[in-house]
Image 1: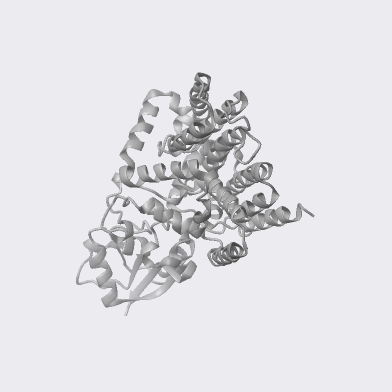
Image 2: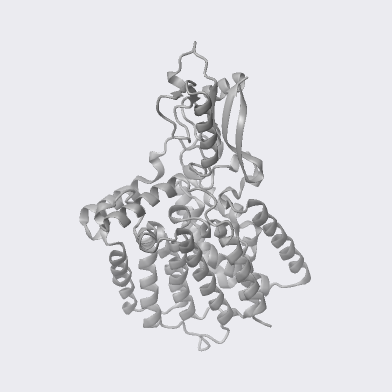
Length: 468
């Protein structure tokens, strides 16, 4: 009987990931990533496939070797869920572990990772990040009242040191943002272990794992290209417009706002003694991203969500009373409602908070290229019915429309009639390109919507317009 709750949660987990798997087309970033995977499959040579070198290589190798891309995301998400569940059950008990599993299974942020691939998934990175921290946490016995009964901090066991080093190297091989993982590892190590010079072996173990599982960065020029690409940051996207504030850099509070949007009021339950080291590390991490780097997206912080949900579950059990139970029930009801209404496109989670938040939470590719299949079918049908028609487009447009039938807005002939026009939400409302406002004004005066693609909460994403 005690296994029934986790069995039911695993069944829900499988359904939410596998039902309509792959229904949504890839985003622009995912399509680019799959180009690298296809290059690896075609050539078998990692050094021949160096596009977007800032994306470290291990996830590409896994996808190239195994294929079944959505199954890979599902598998790594399942490994993460089961690893934290097993740890929580051992350290905190079945009730806490079950609560954690319920939070994980119904988290829109983690569902987004489990239902996507590569760049926007980050679930491979999340898995190895979680395992690296669990290796230290298990050695520290964070949940065991009997642990450290002599009042002394434990010495890090060699097995935990090696496991943490290997998993940290794998995390780095999955995403360069694993550099921020060191903040959490240092916070955990400093508060839970007696320091030892022997523990510095962690560094060569992690480095060796990184180079062995990425391969290409053993070449100094390629490693330098990685470093240069990371230092360039998001500054190359001069058209970004965070929260409509007219800034291409995320405001200092943006990482915190994103966390509240994605995790919600659950974070309140994580403010307890056992999570202190984790919360301090999270504060430092978000502070650096917001004030120094000015950039953040969900797939750049989701690696910490599994452990955050664990500490939320610990807090709920610690403070359990009737009033707490009511609050938890309400929060779960809201989360389940959002799981249902955003299925299967959890990229749009946050859209329910208003127009300003649409397009904010996965950078420029939150919408780009996703769900374009149907709208392109409409465009092609127009071209068949009206082979001579010229279709007006913004100079910068999500459709990547070019060629003789498509006329850029700034190159149009003012005396000509353009029976049709294309417009997309991201470029029309979020990004601030020079021609955007004038193009929008022209459409408002002379065109009406002939076809509209909508995503969750009734958000329009693509429109084919025709003259009134």
